[in-house]
Image (cartoon, rainbow, N blue to C red; front, side, top):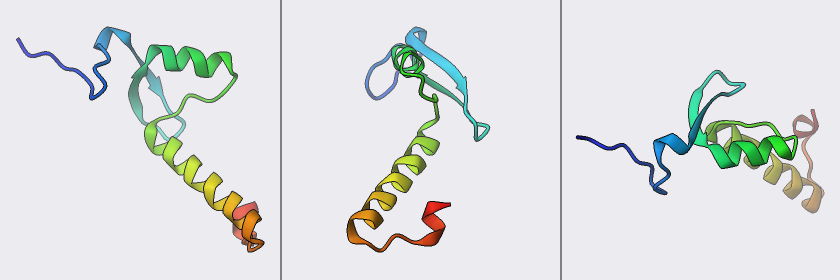
Length: 74
């Protein structure tokens, strides 16, 4: 019998399937989904999350350096 596990050993019964805004259907730790919803935050796939974090870092760096590009503020 084959058992599927994640890198961090979260059991499949502890996972929730979500439909991300980008169209991906992904499995995410159920406790993470509950926490995000309780904080009124969007639950997103890792691709969207990484994209959002990258954008936020670039934006903050632009503010700090004073070289904020016009396309980053849109």
